[in-house]
Length: 298
Image 1 (cartoon, rainbow, N blue to C red):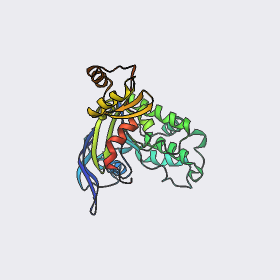
Image 2: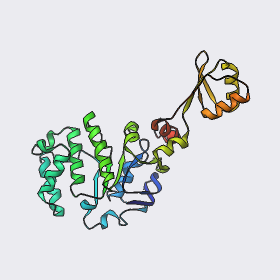
Image 3: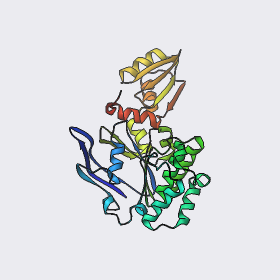
Image 4: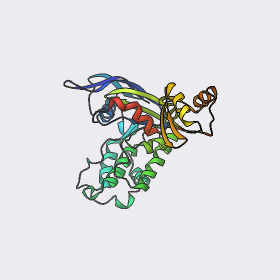
């Protein structure tokens, strides 16, 4: 597991990460979300020992990253696809990493095939596209067959086939019992990939929840209402705290009340209803609602 306890990082007078406490559990894909500047990348860097916390702690399987006996076998991370030696081939890059942990060359072949880079492994990294660098980074992260995988924006630079591939890979890794933590700004991807969500804003934890629970909790869905008594129904709904937007004559979109509540109000007021169709909120809508006050750049 990954465990954070009151993890805090300050840069002078700026608090980048503010007392984060959470646990990332194995066997599921955990999405790590937040607006730009929320502290996601800084948090990930502290987990793998690239930044030192001002206070608090981050541990993998009960130990700080620096105390792990064989870190590449415990944690695989991709925090930036760019830092590759431009004159070194992809294969040579993996050979260097494998040598540090006594990993056999056969494993290099396995991960190159897994990420679809076997045919380009002998080319110099300076000629790689962003997507190819991203794939090589993932190969490096998986080289030690780690139990924990941390990926920061892994779909950057990938084409649609690559996005589908990374989605399948993440779910496969979780199903194998690994701990998977992945950040992304693509809500559509998180909606079909993540089992659990950690959402931060201005360095603070806003939500530690399941995907369905978040959508249900935020309650930003709408209800399509059709009625021959549109005007009195609208007035009744507004009195009960709803926001009503007229679409066509006799049809409106209602926010702030459930379909059941609308039905009860209409019954109480003796108003006819011809249609009540709830539209559940998307992850993107729920996320935007939750982080509205935590956006650094609006």
